[in-house]
Amino acid sequence: MEQMQSVERWGVFEVTCEGPSEGNPFTEQWIRGTFSGKNETVTADGFYDGDGCYKVRFMPSFEGVYTYQVEAGFLEQPLTGTFQVLPAEERNHGPVRVANTYHFAYEDGTPYYSVGTTCYVWALQSDEQIAETLETLKNNAFNKIRFCIFPKHYDYNLGEPRSYPYEGTPMDSSVLNSENFWQYQGKAEGNDWDLERFHPEHFRHLEWCVEQLRDLGIEADLIVMHPYDRWGFSCMTQEQDDLYWKYVLARFSAYRNVWWSLANEYDLLRSKKVEDWERYAGIICEKDPYGHLRSIHNCGPFYDYSRPWVTHCSIQRQDMYRTAEYTDEWRIRWKKPVVLDEIAYEGNIPHGWGNITAEELVRRFWEAACRGGYAGHGETYLNPENVLWWSHGGKLHGESQKRFRLLHEILQETPGIGLRYDGEHFGEVRAVPEESWAEQPVKDYYLIYYSFMRPSSKDYYFDDTTEFQVKVIDTWNMTVEDRGVMKGKIHIELPGRQYMAVQMKKV
Image (tube, rainbow, N blue to C red; front, side, top):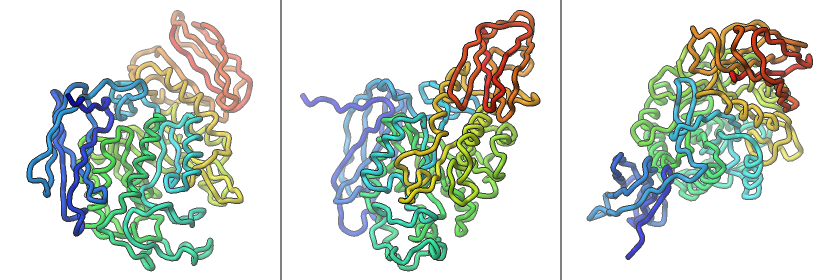
Protein backbone atom coordinates (compact mmCIF):
# COMPACT_ATOMS: atom_id res chain seq x y z
CA MET A 1 0.00 0.00 0.00
CA GLU A 2 1.35 3.47 -0.92
CA GLN A 3 2.31 5.52 2.14
CA MET A 4 0.29 8.70 2.69
CA GLN A 5 2.16 11.93 2.03
CA SER A 6 2.95 13.95 5.14
CA VAL A 7 4.03 17.44 6.17
CA GLU A 8 4.64 19.03 9.55
CA ARG A 9 2.23 21.55 10.98
CA TRP A 10 2.94 25.00 9.46
CA GLY A 11 5.11 23.36 6.82
CA VAL A 12 4.57 23.62 3.05
CA PHE A 13 2.51 20.96 1.28
CA GLU A 14 2.79 21.16 -2.48
CA VAL A 15 0.75 19.64 -5.31
CA THR A 16 2.39 19.62 -8.75
CA CYS A 17 0.84 18.80 -12.10
CA GLU A 18 1.67 19.10 -15.77
CA GLY A 19 -0.16 21.47 -18.07
CA PRO A 20 0.15 23.53 -21.24
CA SER A 21 3.30 25.52 -21.92
CA GLU A 22 2.25 27.10 -25.21
CA GLY A 23 1.03 30.67 -25.39
CA ASN A 24 1.51 32.57 -22.13
CA PRO A 25 0.57 30.29 -19.21
CA PHE A 26 1.12 33.17 -16.74
CA THR A 27 -1.90 35.03 -18.10
CA GLU A 28 -3.91 32.40 -20.01
CA GLN A 29 -4.09 29.61 -17.41
CA TRP A 30 -5.24 29.33 -13.80
CA ILE A 31 -4.91 26.73 -11.05
CA ARG A 32 -6.10 26.63 -7.45
CA GLY A 33 -6.44 24.13 -4.64
CA THR A 34 -8.81 23.57 -1.74
CA PHE A 35 -7.37 21.89 1.35
CA SER A 36 -9.63 20.58 4.11
CA GLY A 37 -9.00 19.21 7.58
CA LYS A 38 -11.34 18.86 10.52
CA ASN A 39 -10.48 22.40 11.74
CA GLU A 40 -10.04 24.40 8.54
CA THR A 41 -10.72 24.64 4.82
CA VAL A 42 -8.38 26.83 2.80
CA THR A 43 -8.48 27.75 -0.88
CA ALA A 44 -5.18 28.92 -2.37
CA ASP A 45 -4.16 30.06 -5.84
CA GLY A 46 -1.42 28.16 -7.62
CA PHE A 47 1.09 29.36 -10.20
CA TYR A 48 2.96 28.39 -13.32
CA ASP A 49 6.56 27.38 -12.58
CA GLY A 50 7.78 27.05 -16.17
CA ASP A 51 8.40 24.05 -18.45
CA GLY A 52 4.76 22.97 -18.32
CA CYS A 53 4.81 22.64 -14.50
CA TYR A 54 2.01 24.06 -12.31
CA LYS A 55 2.06 24.15 -8.49
CA VAL A 56 -0.30 24.84 -5.60
CA ARG A 57 1.03 25.28 -2.07
CA PHE A 58 -0.66 25.02 1.31
CA MET A 59 0.39 25.72 4.92
CA PRO A 60 -1.68 23.58 7.35
CA SER A 61 -2.43 25.13 10.73
CA PHE A 62 -3.54 21.92 12.47
CA GLU A 63 -2.47 18.30 12.83
CA GLY A 64 -4.45 15.42 11.39
CA VAL A 65 -5.64 14.09 8.05
CA TYR A 66 -6.35 16.55 5.24
CA THR A 67 -7.83 16.14 1.79
CA TYR A 68 -7.15 18.29 -1.24
CA GLN A 69 -8.81 19.06 -4.53
CA VAL A 70 -6.89 20.91 -7.23
CA GLU A 71 -8.73 22.48 -10.15
CA ALA A 72 -7.31 24.20 -13.23
CA GLY A 73 -8.54 25.58 -16.50
CA PHE A 74 -6.68 22.82 -18.33
CA LEU A 75 -7.77 19.88 -16.13
CA GLU A 76 -10.76 17.82 -17.20
CA GLN A 77 -11.11 16.38 -13.69
CA PRO A 78 -9.86 17.80 -10.38
CA LEU A 79 -6.81 16.22 -8.78
CA THR A 80 -7.68 14.80 -5.36
CA GLY A 81 -5.73 13.19 -2.55
CA THR A 82 -5.11 12.84 1.15
CA PHE A 83 -2.15 13.75 3.34
CA GLN A 84 -1.18 13.66 7.00
CA VAL A 85 -0.13 16.73 9.00
CA LEU A 86 2.36 15.78 11.72
CA PRO A 87 3.27 17.71 14.88
CA ALA A 88 5.56 20.71 14.36
CA GLU A 89 9.25 20.08 14.90
CA GLU A 90 11.00 21.68 17.87
CA ARG A 91 12.02 25.01 16.26
CA ASN A 92 8.76 25.43 14.36
CA HIS A 93 6.37 27.69 16.29
CA GLY A 94 4.22 28.71 13.34
CA PRO A 95 3.80 32.14 11.73
CA VAL A 96 4.23 35.32 13.78
CA ARG A 97 1.02 37.11 14.77
CA VAL A 98 0.19 40.35 16.56
CA ALA A 99 -0.21 39.65 20.29
CA ASN A 100 -1.20 41.83 23.20
CA THR A 101 -2.04 44.70 20.80
CA TYR A 102 1.52 46.07 20.63
CA HIS A 103 3.64 42.95 20.39
CA PHE A 104 4.11 39.64 18.58
CA ALA A 105 3.90 35.93 19.28
CA TYR A 106 4.19 32.82 17.18
CA GLU A 107 0.95 31.01 16.49
CA ASP A 108 1.72 28.41 19.18
CA GLY A 109 1.83 31.24 21.75
CA THR A 110 5.61 31.58 22.09
CA PRO A 111 6.49 35.30 22.41
CA TYR A 112 8.41 36.77 19.48
CA TYR A 113 10.73 39.73 20.13
CA SER A 114 11.89 41.22 16.85
CA VAL A 115 15.61 41.83 16.38
CA GLY A 116 15.69 42.72 12.71
CA THR A 117 18.29 43.69 10.15
CA THR A 118 18.14 45.18 6.66
CA CYS A 119 19.97 43.53 3.77
CA TYR A 120 18.15 44.59 0.62
CA VAL A 121 19.50 42.35 -2.12
CA TRP A 122 21.55 39.71 -0.32
CA ALA A 123 19.50 37.04 -2.05
CA LEU A 124 20.52 38.29 -5.52
CA GLN A 125 24.28 37.93 -4.98
CA SER A 126 26.61 35.04 -5.84
CA ASP A 127 26.29 31.63 -4.20
CA GLU A 128 29.44 32.31 -2.18
CA GLN A 129 28.15 35.66 -0.91
CA ILE A 130 24.77 34.18 -0.01
CA ALA A 131 26.44 31.34 1.90
CA GLU A 132 28.52 33.89 3.82
CA THR A 133 25.38 35.90 4.65
CA LEU A 134 23.57 32.83 5.96
CA GLU A 135 26.58 31.88 8.07
CA THR A 136 26.65 35.41 9.52
CA LEU A 137 22.95 35.24 10.33
CA LYS A 138 23.37 31.80 11.90
CA ASN A 139 25.88 33.24 14.36
CA ASN A 140 23.90 36.35 15.31
CA ALA A 141 20.71 37.14 17.21
CA PHE A 142 18.73 38.42 14.22
CA ASN A 143 15.30 36.85 13.87
CA LYS A 144 14.02 39.03 10.99
CA ILE A 145 15.62 40.29 7.79
CA ARG A 146 14.20 42.78 5.29
CA PHE A 147 15.01 42.17 1.64
CA CYS A 148 13.71 42.83 -1.87
CA ILE A 149 12.17 40.69 -4.58
CA PHE A 150 13.20 43.18 -7.28
CA PRO A 151 16.88 44.10 -7.81
CA LYS A 152 18.08 47.44 -6.50
CA HIS A 153 19.75 50.45 -8.17
CA TYR A 154 21.29 52.92 -5.74
CA ASP A 155 24.63 54.13 -4.33
CA TYR A 156 26.95 51.15 -3.79
CA ASN A 157 24.42 49.06 -5.78
CA LEU A 158 25.41 49.48 -9.41
CA GLY A 159 26.13 45.83 -10.23
CA GLU A 160 23.76 43.44 -11.96
CA PRO A 161 21.73 40.93 -9.91
CA ARG A 162 22.14 37.20 -10.39
CA SER A 163 18.71 37.05 -12.06
CA TYR A 164 15.69 39.14 -13.04
CA PRO A 165 12.00 38.59 -12.26
CA TYR A 166 10.91 38.77 -15.92
CA GLU A 167 11.97 37.28 -19.21
CA GLY A 168 13.88 39.76 -21.34
CA THR A 169 17.06 41.80 -21.52
CA PRO A 170 18.28 44.56 -19.15
CA MET A 171 19.89 47.82 -20.19
CA ASP A 172 23.64 47.91 -20.75
CA SER A 173 25.00 48.59 -17.27
CA SER A 174 28.52 49.34 -18.53
CA VAL A 175 27.40 52.96 -19.00
CA LEU A 176 26.75 53.35 -15.25
CA ASN A 177 29.07 55.11 -12.85
CA SER A 178 28.76 56.86 -9.51
CA GLU A 179 28.17 60.21 -11.22
CA ASN A 180 25.44 59.32 -13.70
CA PHE A 181 23.48 56.58 -11.95
CA TRP A 182 20.70 58.93 -10.82
CA GLN A 183 19.69 59.73 -14.39
CA TYR A 184 18.60 56.11 -14.83
CA GLN A 185 16.58 55.96 -11.61
CA GLY A 186 13.02 54.80 -12.25
CA LYS A 187 13.53 54.66 -16.01
CA ALA A 188 12.61 51.86 -18.41
CA GLU A 189 14.71 53.03 -21.37
CA GLY A 190 17.21 50.47 -22.66
CA ASN A 191 15.38 47.50 -21.11
CA ASP A 192 13.46 44.90 -23.07
CA TRP A 193 11.17 42.95 -20.73
CA ASP A 194 8.06 40.90 -21.26
CA LEU A 195 6.23 42.13 -18.14
CA GLU A 196 3.56 39.45 -18.52
CA ARG A 197 6.04 36.58 -18.50
CA PHE A 198 7.86 35.84 -15.24
CA HIS A 199 11.28 34.23 -14.92
CA PRO A 200 10.52 31.29 -12.58
CA GLU A 201 14.15 30.60 -11.73
CA HIS A 202 14.39 34.05 -10.07
CA PHE A 203 11.48 33.19 -7.79
CA ARG A 204 12.64 29.61 -7.13
CA HIS A 205 15.92 30.98 -5.87
CA LEU A 206 14.19 33.50 -3.60
CA GLU A 207 12.04 30.67 -2.22
CA TRP A 208 15.20 28.72 -1.44
CA CYS A 209 16.49 31.76 0.47
CA VAL A 210 13.22 32.02 2.42
CA GLU A 211 13.52 28.32 3.29
CA GLN A 212 17.10 28.77 4.55
CA LEU A 213 15.94 31.64 6.75
CA ARG A 214 13.00 29.58 8.01
CA ASP A 215 15.36 26.79 9.05
CA LEU A 216 17.45 29.34 10.97
CA GLY A 217 14.35 30.65 12.76
CA ILE A 218 14.44 33.98 10.88
CA GLU A 219 11.42 35.86 9.51
CA ALA A 220 11.64 36.94 5.85
CA ASP A 221 10.26 40.49 5.63
CA LEU A 222 9.72 40.60 1.85
CA ILE A 223 9.85 44.07 0.28
CA VAL A 224 7.56 43.61 -2.69
CA MET A 225 8.09 47.04 -4.34
CA HIS A 226 10.66 49.83 -4.09
CA PRO A 227 11.79 52.96 -5.99
CA TYR A 228 15.49 52.12 -6.50
CA ASP A 229 15.17 50.96 -10.05
CA ARG A 230 16.81 51.29 -13.49
CA TRP A 231 14.92 48.37 -15.03
CA GLY A 232 11.41 49.85 -15.17
CA PHE A 233 9.88 47.60 -12.49
CA SER A 234 8.85 50.60 -10.39
CA CYS A 235 6.74 52.12 -13.17
CA MET A 236 4.74 49.20 -14.50
CA THR A 237 1.07 49.56 -15.41
CA GLN A 238 -1.75 48.76 -13.00
CA GLU A 239 -2.43 45.49 -14.80
CA GLN A 240 1.25 44.49 -14.69
CA ASP A 241 1.50 45.39 -11.00
CA ASP A 242 -1.56 43.32 -10.14
CA LEU A 243 -0.26 40.32 -12.10
CA TYR A 244 3.03 40.58 -10.22
CA TRP A 245 1.32 40.81 -6.82
CA LYS A 246 -0.84 37.76 -7.48
CA TYR A 247 2.14 35.73 -8.65
CA VAL A 248 4.20 36.68 -5.59
CA LEU A 249 1.33 35.82 -3.25
CA ALA A 250 0.74 32.45 -4.91
CA ARG A 251 4.42 31.53 -4.61
CA PHE A 252 5.32 32.78 -1.10
CA SER A 253 2.16 32.77 1.04
CA ALA A 254 2.53 29.18 2.21
CA TYR A 255 5.85 29.89 3.95
CA ARG A 256 5.25 30.46 7.65
CA ASN A 257 8.13 32.94 8.06
CA VAL A 258 6.97 35.45 5.44
CA TRP A 259 5.99 39.06 6.27
CA TRP A 260 4.68 41.44 3.60
CA SER A 261 6.24 44.87 3.23
CA LEU A 262 4.27 46.51 0.43
CA ALA A 263 7.16 48.86 -0.28
CA ASN A 264 10.35 50.34 0.99
CA GLU A 265 9.95 54.13 1.02
CA TYR A 266 6.57 54.00 -0.67
CA ASP A 267 6.43 57.81 -0.97
CA LEU A 268 9.40 57.81 -3.39
CA LEU A 269 7.47 55.69 -5.89
CA ARG A 270 6.16 58.75 -7.69
CA SER A 271 4.06 56.78 -10.17
CA LYS A 272 2.00 55.19 -7.37
CA LYS A 273 -0.83 56.82 -5.46
CA VAL A 274 -2.50 55.90 -2.19
CA GLU A 275 -5.25 54.22 -4.22
CA ASP A 276 -2.63 51.87 -5.69
CA TRP A 277 -1.26 50.90 -2.28
CA GLU A 278 -4.75 50.27 -1.00
CA ARG A 279 -5.44 48.10 -4.07
CA TYR A 280 -2.28 46.06 -3.46
CA ALA A 281 -3.31 45.64 0.17
CA GLY A 282 -6.70 44.40 -1.00
CA ILE A 283 -4.99 41.80 -3.18
CA ILE A 284 -2.93 40.61 -0.20
CA CYS A 285 -5.98 40.31 2.03
CA GLU A 286 -7.82 38.37 -0.68
CA LYS A 287 -5.00 36.13 -1.92
CA ASP A 288 -3.02 35.37 1.26
CA PRO A 289 -5.25 32.85 3.07
CA TYR A 290 -2.93 32.75 6.10
CA GLY A 291 -3.04 36.39 7.16
CA HIS A 292 0.70 37.03 7.31
CA LEU A 293 1.88 40.30 8.87
CA ARG A 294 1.51 43.32 6.58
CA SER A 295 2.92 46.84 6.59
CA ILE A 296 4.42 49.57 4.40
CA HIS A 297 7.60 51.59 4.95
CA ASN A 298 8.10 55.35 4.56
CA CYS A 299 10.88 57.72 3.59
CA GLY A 300 9.25 61.02 4.59
CA PRO A 301 5.57 61.10 5.55
CA PHE A 302 4.18 58.12 7.41
CA TYR A 303 1.54 55.98 5.77
CA ASP A 304 -1.80 55.91 7.56
CA TYR A 305 -1.04 52.98 9.85
CA SER A 306 -4.57 53.09 11.22
CA ARG A 307 -5.76 51.40 8.01
CA PRO A 308 -7.37 48.07 8.95
CA TRP A 309 -5.14 46.00 6.65
CA VAL A 310 -1.96 47.26 8.40
CA THR A 311 -0.97 44.80 11.13
CA HIS A 312 2.05 46.73 12.44
CA CYS A 313 3.90 50.00 11.84
CA SER A 314 7.09 49.70 9.77
CA ILE A 315 8.79 53.03 10.43
CA GLN A 316 11.83 54.87 9.11
CA ARG A 317 13.10 57.70 11.25
CA GLN A 318 11.94 61.16 10.22
CA ASP A 319 14.34 62.82 12.64
CA MET A 320 18.02 61.93 12.22
CA TYR A 321 18.62 62.15 15.96
CA ARG A 322 15.38 60.98 17.58
CA THR A 323 13.20 58.03 16.64
CA ALA A 324 13.20 55.47 19.42
CA GLU A 325 12.16 58.27 21.79
CA TYR A 326 8.82 58.56 19.94
CA THR A 327 7.95 54.86 20.20
CA ASP A 328 5.40 55.19 22.99
CA GLU A 329 3.76 58.17 21.23
CA TRP A 330 3.32 56.13 18.04
CA ARG A 331 1.93 53.20 20.00
CA ILE A 332 -0.73 55.51 21.44
CA ARG A 333 -1.49 57.00 18.02
CA TRP A 334 -1.92 53.75 16.08
CA LYS A 335 -2.50 51.11 18.77
CA LYS A 336 -0.39 48.59 16.87
CA PRO A 337 3.12 47.15 17.22
CA VAL A 338 5.80 49.70 16.36
CA VAL A 339 8.77 48.29 14.43
CA LEU A 340 11.49 50.86 13.74
CA ASP A 341 12.90 49.14 10.68
CA GLU A 342 15.28 52.01 9.93
CA ILE A 343 16.70 54.22 12.65
CA ALA A 344 19.99 54.98 10.81
CA TYR A 345 22.81 52.48 10.30
CA GLU A 346 26.11 51.80 11.98
CA GLY A 347 28.76 52.75 9.46
CA ASN A 348 30.86 55.48 7.89
CA ILE A 349 29.41 56.26 4.45
CA PRO A 350 28.84 59.96 3.58
CA HIS A 351 25.05 59.69 3.87
CA GLY A 352 23.81 60.86 7.26
CA TRP A 353 21.58 57.83 7.65
CA GLY A 354 24.58 55.50 7.36
CA ASN A 355 27.27 56.71 9.73
CA ILE A 356 26.16 56.49 13.34
CA THR A 357 28.29 54.67 15.91
CA ALA A 358 27.69 51.17 17.17
CA GLU A 359 27.09 52.60 20.64
CA GLU A 360 24.33 54.84 19.34
CA LEU A 361 22.62 52.05 17.41
CA VAL A 362 22.63 49.80 20.48
CA ARG A 363 21.28 52.69 22.56
CA ARG A 364 18.39 53.15 20.11
CA PHE A 365 17.57 49.43 20.32
CA TRP A 366 17.34 49.52 24.12
CA GLU A 367 15.44 52.82 24.13
CA ALA A 368 12.86 51.41 21.69
CA ALA A 369 12.52 48.16 23.63
CA CYS A 370 11.91 49.94 26.94
CA ARG A 371 9.27 52.09 25.26
CA GLY A 372 7.42 49.03 24.02
CA GLY A 373 8.71 48.81 20.43
CA TYR A 374 11.28 47.05 18.30
CA ALA A 375 14.27 48.54 16.49
CA GLY A 376 16.07 47.37 13.36
CA HIS A 377 19.78 47.08 12.54
CA GLY A 378 21.80 47.94 9.47
CA GLU A 379 25.51 48.26 8.71
CA THR A 380 27.13 50.52 6.08
CA TYR A 381 30.90 50.43 6.43
CA LEU A 382 32.96 51.44 3.40
CA ASN A 383 35.40 48.89 2.04
CA PRO A 384 37.43 48.47 -1.18
CA GLU A 385 34.88 46.07 -2.66
CA ASN A 386 31.91 48.37 -1.91
CA VAL A 387 30.16 45.35 -0.41
CA LEU A 388 27.93 46.78 2.31
CA TRP A 389 25.90 44.48 4.55
CA TRP A 390 22.90 46.84 4.26
CA SER A 391 22.53 45.78 0.65
CA HIS A 392 24.81 42.88 -0.27
CA GLY A 393 25.11 40.87 2.93
CA GLY A 394 28.29 38.89 3.49
CA LYS A 395 30.20 39.60 6.70
CA LEU A 396 29.44 42.07 9.46
CA HIS A 397 32.32 44.32 10.50
CA GLY A 398 30.70 46.45 13.19
CA GLU A 399 30.20 46.08 16.92
CA SER A 400 26.48 46.63 17.45
CA GLN A 401 25.31 43.21 16.28
CA LYS A 402 27.37 41.50 18.98
CA ARG A 403 25.22 43.15 21.64
CA PHE A 404 21.72 42.33 20.43
CA ARG A 405 21.76 38.78 21.76
CA LEU A 406 21.87 40.09 25.33
CA LEU A 407 18.92 42.40 24.66
CA HIS A 408 16.94 39.54 23.15
CA GLU A 409 17.70 37.32 26.14
CA ILE A 410 16.55 40.04 28.54
CA LEU A 411 13.35 40.60 26.53
CA GLN A 412 12.61 36.88 26.70
CA GLU A 413 12.56 37.17 30.51
CA THR A 414 9.59 39.57 30.33
CA PRO A 415 6.56 38.20 32.22
CA GLY A 416 3.75 37.71 29.71
CA ILE A 417 4.25 39.19 26.25
CA GLY A 418 6.00 42.51 25.78
CA LEU A 419 7.01 45.66 27.62
CA ARG A 420 5.42 49.10 27.81
CA TYR A 421 6.73 52.49 28.83
CA ASP A 422 5.95 53.27 32.47
CA GLY A 423 5.62 57.01 32.04
CA GLU A 424 8.03 59.83 32.63
CA HIS A 425 10.82 59.12 35.12
CA PHE A 426 13.51 61.75 34.79
CA GLY A 427 16.92 60.41 33.72
CA GLU A 428 15.75 56.91 32.85
CA VAL A 429 13.47 54.93 30.55
CA ARG A 430 11.41 52.59 32.71
CA ALA A 431 9.54 49.63 31.25
CA VAL A 432 7.03 47.28 32.84
CA PRO A 433 5.15 44.26 31.44
CA GLU A 434 2.35 45.12 29.02
CA GLU A 435 -0.16 43.26 31.18
CA SER A 436 0.54 45.37 34.28
CA TRP A 437 -2.57 47.25 35.40
CA ALA A 438 -1.99 51.00 35.46
CA GLU A 439 -3.51 51.24 38.93
CA GLN A 440 -1.36 48.42 40.29
CA PRO A 441 0.94 50.30 42.67
CA VAL A 442 3.85 47.84 42.44
CA LYS A 443 4.62 45.96 39.26
CA ASP A 444 6.09 42.46 39.20
CA TYR A 445 8.89 43.47 36.88
CA TYR A 446 10.90 46.57 35.94
CA LEU A 447 13.48 47.04 33.22
CA ILE A 448 15.13 50.43 33.60
CA TYR A 449 17.50 51.87 31.01
CA TYR A 450 19.76 54.86 31.69
CA SER A 451 20.77 55.47 28.06
CA PHE A 452 23.56 58.07 27.80
CA MET A 453 23.09 59.09 31.46
CA ARG A 454 25.86 58.01 33.84
CA PRO A 455 24.45 57.68 37.37
CA SER A 456 26.81 56.40 40.07
CA SER A 457 23.84 55.04 42.02
CA LYS A 458 20.03 54.95 42.01
CA ASP A 459 17.45 54.67 44.76
CA TYR A 460 13.99 53.15 44.41
CA TYR A 461 11.10 52.65 46.77
CA PHE A 462 7.91 50.76 45.87
CA ASP A 463 6.67 49.47 49.24
CA ASP A 464 8.10 47.88 52.38
CA THR A 465 7.43 44.22 51.62
CA THR A 466 7.80 43.36 47.93
CA GLU A 467 11.10 41.58 47.28
CA PHE A 468 12.93 42.01 43.98
CA GLN A 469 15.79 40.09 42.44
CA VAL A 470 18.05 42.92 41.22
CA LYS A 471 20.47 42.68 38.33
CA VAL A 472 22.73 45.37 36.88
CA ILE A 473 23.21 45.13 33.12
CA ASP A 474 26.03 46.72 31.16
CA THR A 475 24.41 46.73 27.72
CA TRP A 476 27.65 47.65 25.92
CA ASN A 477 30.14 45.41 27.74
CA MET A 478 27.51 42.65 27.81
CA THR A 479 27.68 41.80 31.51
CA VAL A 480 24.88 40.96 33.92
CA GLU A 481 25.67 41.26 37.65
CA ASP A 482 23.28 39.71 40.16
CA ARG A 483 22.94 42.05 43.16
CA GLY A 484 20.70 39.72 45.13
CA VAL A 485 17.25 40.24 46.66
CA MET A 486 16.23 43.73 47.85
CA LYS A 487 13.07 45.34 49.28
CA GLY A 488 11.93 48.60 50.83
CA LYS A 489 14.36 51.41 50.13
CA ILE A 490 16.44 49.87 47.37
CA HIS A 491 19.88 51.40 46.82
CA ILE A 492 21.79 50.28 43.70
CA GLU A 493 25.43 51.20 43.15
CA LEU A 494 26.27 51.81 39.46
CA PRO A 495 29.62 52.29 37.66
CA GLY A 496 28.93 55.79 36.34
CA ARG A 497 29.11 54.62 32.71
CA GLN A 498 26.73 55.14 29.85
CA TYR A 499 24.40 52.40 28.55
CA MET A 500 23.65 50.76 31.88
CA ALA A 501 20.35 49.11 32.81
CA VAL A 502 18.74 47.57 35.88
CA GLN A 503 16.36 44.63 35.93
CA MET A 504 14.12 44.11 38.97
CA LYS A 505 12.02 40.97 39.04
CA LYS A 506 9.57 40.22 41.85
CA VAL A 507 10.65 37.18 43.84
